[in-house]
Image (cartoon, rainbow, N blue to C red; front, side, top):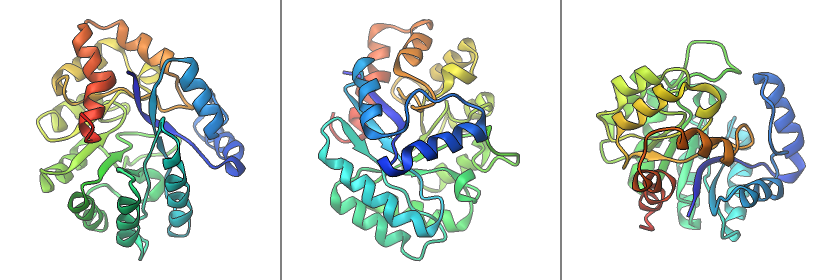
Amino acid sequence: MLIDFHAHVFPDRLAAGAVAGLAARAHFTPYTNGSLADTQRIMSEQGVDRFVALNIAVSPKTERHVNDFAISLLQYPNVIPFGSVHPDSENALSELSRLQKAGVKGIKFHNEYQGFFVDDGKGMRIYEECVRLGLIMLFHGGADRGFSPPVKTPPARMRKVAQAFPEGKFVVAHLGGQDMIGDAVEYLSDTNVMIDVSFSSRTAAPDAAEACIRAFGFDRVLFGTDCPWDTPESTLAFLSGMHFTQEEMRRICEKNALRLLGEG
């Protein structure tokens, strides 16, 4: 089984415009139009059995709509939807409860789009509730090429969050820090944080990526693409060029995800 732990899906009415806008901002070429149907197509064609569908509450007013969409995706057996809450929303905590009761297993944070540093106090109250509810927390890690510095989720700041919640289920995307892999190893490899390999085939040197994966250990790494910005085929080819055993690849591609989701 192959599980993609990091893909982005948008409601049909918003998908084309959202992906076009993001592509223009970051100067990336998308591989899908961002809709559920097109994402399911590429996943099926390239061997992915299940994928985590991520969306982001970029403001308090979009929060409930994002989560309504996430809940609607629960009907699809191959989709694992994550919700999102905004730290400035007065309904953030109740939204977490609504998502958890509906069967959603995780929350996506993108601190650049949401406008707060990862270790800010207003985020800490949300993480605390996620821990209480048993929700997975998936963060964009490191730089985002669509935004100027300062980086809002650098590994050093993420370390403070991990230390504050040692029982938290944290996933930090992009090898723990896009364009900041060395810092990810230094600040996060000895914490409770897991990482995913999303978008690394387009941004990371293979030797640095392999060293990072080994530093975190094969029980703390998840396969992910960042679709529509990268593909399963490209990501698998990137990993296949490294010196991993079949069992190590199986942990990355399947076993760790199932364990984190409470299914293995």
